Image (tube, rainbow, N blue to C red; front, side, top):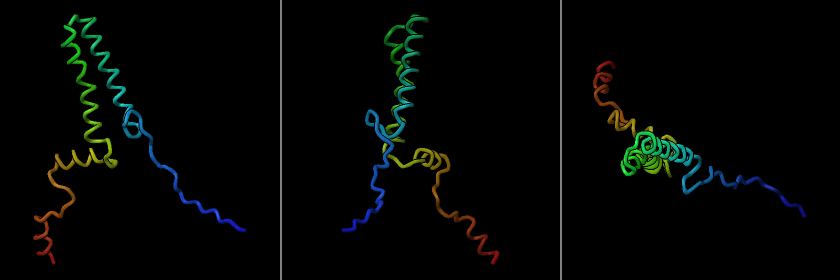
Length: 108
């Protein structure tokens, strides 16, 4: 009995998941959490700012990073965030420029 072995490439090509975030998306969240804790401690301990104000100011880096990751990175294709920001900045996607089409026809 001859058995043929065929490589099917059926392995999981996933980048993994940590805390529900795909791939390495947890790293900027952890870095921003550390930065938020540092800002909180500096404001509260060194400058004697009220703990509630220190907490709100310190939460800005963590909240901003987590919002960015969840809205523009998690579950989206690579480059989605850059393409979306480019679309917002330029106003158009990949569409023909209709203003140049008339001058091209006149050249023929």
